[in-house]
Image 1 (cartoon, rainbow, N blue to C red):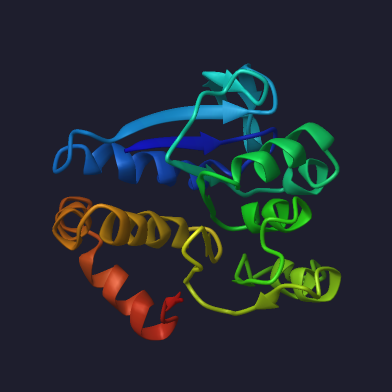
Image 2: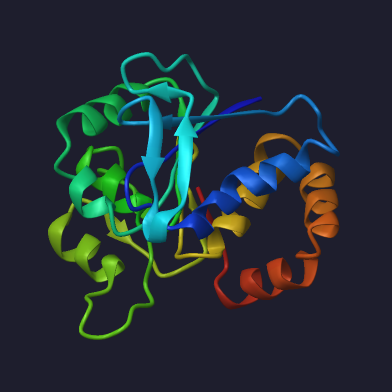
Length: 206
């Protein structure tokens, strides 16, 4: 299975746990491939100075089975980036689209979440406004839910920050196998946290 991790300026480095979970999952399922995509190919400056190299830009990205849109303060620029929105909208026709944290706001702006249930980051430091509340107010065609993961078959959205780990484990469970997901959770020492999060914020699947 081929995953593309979509990054952009000012992504929070914690959201690179999406890549990290898949990297560890390859120990249980070596057929996983992981690549990075950005609005422009090359170096991308994430929040607080971390630099990553995107293998592909939106103009030369190959086909993927899954595209994962990461979150971070830069989402506010990406929702105004025509190239990003066009890329995500076009790929949503034949690719499983996934967002973690405020990456959900970018999918919302691209129209990918229209008519669907979705979630995004909820917890903030005042006076910052909750992105989940912003999604509810700005995109009324989306049914917002405060939970860990919302799986709408062709689109999967996740809650904030470290729930990106739960989203990736959910993808491994539902798109590969429960055995691969459980083994990955075990080797990253996240089994108890995953179960606790599912109990507190139950995933929604339809």
